[in-house]
Length: 248
Image 1 (tube, rainbow, N blue to C red):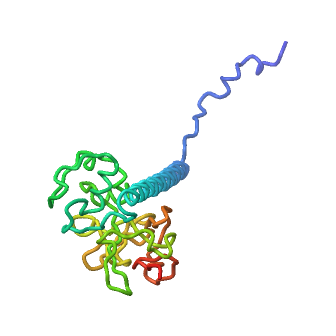
Image 2 (image 1 turned 30 degrees about the vertical axis):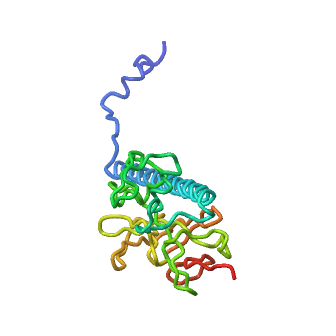
């Protein structure tokens, strides 16, 4: 006959033994790991969102650049005027480009034109990064409105003659706008007032403008899009031209 202890089922020897739960330290460690993973997830998703917004902005500027060159082809090889209310028509560059894009503009010669396409949530006139600073605005880009340093003449106001520009690949035409207290200006006459909000949502005040500490997208006359940082703008260490330089 087998020994008596073999007659007892295995479970009977484990009666009264309680399962050990998680200790407080273990629970805190799990919570810390989950919090870390959540933080990393938010950080990655934020970077992906900012990258997507930046890509959209670049695409917008390329489309606007294509419309500007199309306008020039049909208007004596001149860009649309940056802003010139004395003209009978096309007195402001965004409305000229809206019409070139086939959109109806009502009251083009008035001080307050309207356009149904203009007021849509997403158009090539709105950078998603800058739109967050002023959700109700329809325009976040600014056209160069500077004077020729040699002659004091504002060719952008008149309609910049494309063939007269000495270095089109370096000549800045459109930029990410700087934000005033209530709107983005459609024109800028000073390179320092470009809105550098890509990659950095923090803004500092410079006179009437809010200026981010990140990067700005710029459209050059040859149609390519590039970037400028706030540091490059402040130090002047870049190869781009703001005040137009004409052929001799």
